[in-house]
Length: 82
Length: 393
Image (cartoon, rainbow over all chains, first blue to last red; front, side, top):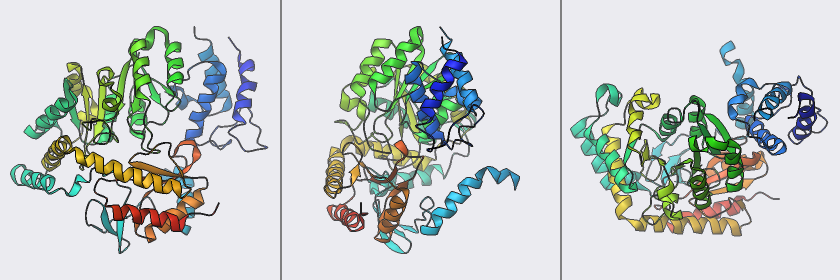
């Protein structure tokens, strides 16, 4: 079961596919407002994350995900489920 | 005003678009002439973006049925069926649709959008799971959002990805509703329904197929993709619309299970909406009868669709993955799509412009929808206009 600190760098790596060159994500950055992801891109991001961690991420988490930190916290919770 | 602040970016994007174009999302049809022609911007224009697949909007039999219903039953129902009662036509149409599909029962909704809202907000509950194809229509997403089920996407038209997600659900698969579409509205591609139905059966899940764009278009009898793929017995719910092949407005859901009837008491988008007007029901019933008895309409539709797809392909346009009555031209740059859309309209051709993020994979699309009512000459004119306006690489 990966920890927050295990998940974070992997999410950074996946996020780089979606963010403009030279823009490095940080934990407090908002996916839409700061990293410029459109709503459809956020859902595409989830598909990539699902493959990486071999989990299914329900769309129901999205209202609680604004920042990179929110996303990683949700993933930590999901990957800890039996 | 503060309440409009959140639309600031949208307003800027709209402003930029309007500097080089008329508003592609608010086109005024000044006069409608037929199922395939209208006056737009003072110009006679071929309609190639109205989903009027069988061209029945001007069929004299449908018009007569609607006119008679207005004379005999009035202009509207003035309320919901729960409050005001059902007209005999509502009930008859539900029976005819269920009979057409060989289903136990069916519910008519006031629009196709409301059909998905009505079913998906209500049927799958708190402990249930929805697995939906990533390219599903906004009405499916919105219905899911209104409900309490856990919602998981799978990669578009990828049965292996669907199965992977089912495996992760363990014993929850029997509480899972899989949702796919017969024909996807953006690129015109079909769901790989035979393998999806096999997976559904293997895991004991439920399957809902939205046949909005495939009713009257696919299958020997026009029932849609499930009929064409030979898997109707594995489909638990069919959702569809009257606003495409049936030439009116409204939607429906059919099921093998009589329990669907219970949604009449629980589905807010059914309970709290005015029911379809008598004229709409009457023309839809007539259109369904025509669809069932005139297979030549489907033949003409497909002749036109293949003609347009083949011509645009030979012109070098990048198209959706397979010929279908939805012929989508994919353009890498938004500006190219906007310019081509404007050029086509000036040449008297109306198609749909789809800009990111509405289209899959961040693309821009010019989406044509072909009709059985298009003449060969009209299809040729559409092709000529595309040829003369093709953007340089």
